[in-house]
Amino acid sequence: MIKILDSTLREGEQTPYVNFTVDEKIEIAKLLDKIGVDMIEAGDPSVSPKVYEAIKKISSLNLKAEIIAHSLAMKSGIEKAKSAGVNRVVVFFPTSKIHLETKMRKTQEEALEIIKEHVKYAKSLGLKVRYTPEDATRTEFDFLVKACNTAIEAGADRISIADTLGIMQPHVFYDQIKKLKKALLPCEIDVHCHNDFGLALANAMAAVRAGANCIHVTVNGMGERTGIPDLAETIIAYNVLDNVEKYDLKYIKELSSYVEKASGFFTAPNKTIIGQNAFSHKSGVHTNGVIKNPKTYEAFDPEIVGMERKIIIDKYTGKAAVKSKLDEYNIKVDEEGLKKIVMEIKKIGDDRKILHDADIIEIAERITGETLDVIPKTINAIILIAVESQVYTTSVVRRLKNFKNIDSVFEITGDHDISAYVKVDSTAELNNLIEELRTVPGIKQTNTKLVLKKHNGVHNGKDKVAE
Ligand code: HCA
Ligand code: CU
Image (cartoon, rainbow, N blue to C red):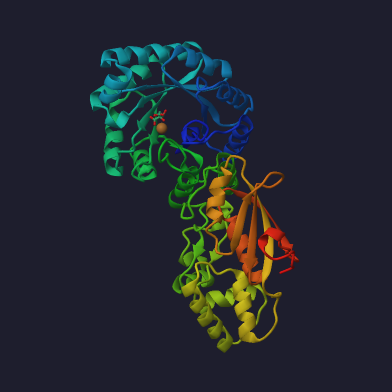
């Protein structure tokens, strides 16, 4: 049965500009344990005192998952792992020619000695040991086998085959793991696949087919450069495509969102499983199918991972989708009216990027001649915006400056970080703007104040006259 090792707290924290606090790490570890990952790689205790503290605290939580500390082949690192109370330590030492010669300046013989000595040392402290040959996939095969078998003989019971540069392809990795399985002494094999070519999960799944036991993942696929397989993607792929039911899927969205907020590392809309578009349907053909039966265009039910289906209304939309949207608001129109509304949506959709529910209500109002819920025109508002603590406020301001309805933007002190002065023609537009603002990465919260009257100062040329 497949095992999952989550390395969000170690590999994930190696993502550029990402740092978790100790409390955030504890929260992440607890959520990972609820999902049921088999192992949690909690960090390398030599990195900093706070990393050590987090590993120690996580080790004392009595989670179901095995808690692992990562360490270079270095006695002090192994000792810190031991004193942090982990179940297992990783001894990592590279095996490829380029890493040995240029980075470590060691011969192959010296490398074997170092591996043996440090695995033995970790075992002597009573720790379980995984050995990672860093850059394994660029290592001469015979030497890779020698290095791994040296570690196994010294007491390692897991070997992590690291595709450190993400250069594998599924069929190549499959063959390599098959060969390794035959050549290695008894042990479990982990695969640690980097995603530099977008092949990380495919490579890892091929390796499992060939006999590997465990896949390394991170939440949202974080990690050095382009990261490693995404936890959600991996357990859903196994669940839906391979009937593996050992992981609890319902915490996936919560964990992913929590990690996004804690890390300031936001996923793209087209991100698998938890991306904003993962269950959005747009073209008339697709929405018509989904409304009749979601299975026409959904490989699995979004609810199982805490996500929601979305029907996008714009120029691609057909009657079925518009009708279902109107039904949501209890707006009744006849066939003729529906056609007109669809035509109008297509016309507006040609000129505008986003159409929100408020637009559709407005259009329906115009076409049916009934007043639904639109309020007077020309509205000025001040939107106070709070930004996530780890996000650079000016980078959010830069984005806001491009919004058509935002007149001016100020960075401010106090409970909020930004104030935006906004001019819109209707509440519908204001609504749209606020909704759009909420999708801007880094914006935590908005608070909108309607301007009742605007008075200009003297220097403005006019003399304190209400506009
Ligand atoms: C690194 C080390 C590592 C180790 C993987 C593992 C890699 O380069 O930072 O221990 O399984 O990718 O080789 O993350
Ligand atoms: Cu790595």
